[in-house]
Amino acid sequence: MTATNRGDPLSASASDTNAATDAQKNLVIVGATGMVGGYALRYALEHPAVGRVTAIGRRKLGILHPKLKDVLHQDFADCSALAEVLSDQHAAIFCLGAYTGTVSDNELRTITVDYTLEFARVLHGSSPDAAFVFLSGSGADPTGRSRMSFARYKGEAENALLATGFASVYIFRPAYIYPVTSRREPDFGYGLLRAPAFRLIFPHQVIRADDLARAMVDVAVRGTEERQGLVLENRDIQPIVE
Image (tube, rainbow, N blue to C red; front, side, top):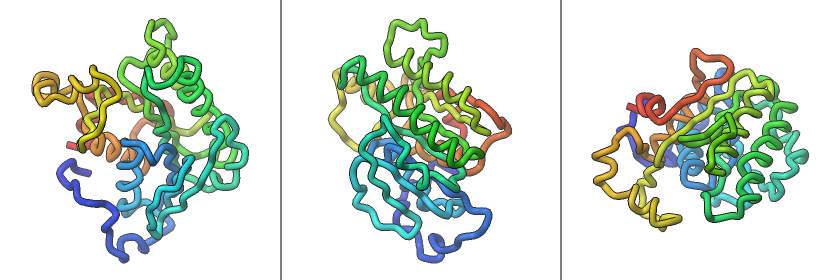
């Protein structure tokens, strides 16, 4: 998998999308309407080793594709209704999240920890052999000592996922996720990070959103030599797509 092929993944030929085999994987993507999740969806749909993609979210994606099953689910505090949808899945890519400062502290913990673990609970019950790929973040603190809520909550979610019993848990901790296409940044600090100079001075503290998504899909499909818990920092993610 390379970082140079950035064409539209949804333009895959019919022969690519219909070439299903027993070796193909069924993937679930949560958060496909977000920046990273959206790219993950596109790369999963074009991946020849993926036979089916189930996208779960609060609104329709507006995408038609022979591999795609678009599932609406409003209440991530209770994912019990997803038990049947989550059966016979090989891996889940969980990108649901919120920016610090855009929601209250209580909401941030609910989204980061509670929603993640509730989804993981139902997935594990329906597909106990599935791998779980989790979008965490640089600075996540599993010790719970950080003064930053984001770091504490991501660390709490990581710890709980690793104890859930999945065959494989892959935790991605990107640094600044470069949005590739223009967007309105959530605050002034993110705007500064987007400046070209930052990427030149701190190349290992930035990763393109599409490259991050590509790496997550690749690991979900192919796995790694690690069969239990693997934490991938920004410096570990970059070589996957180089």
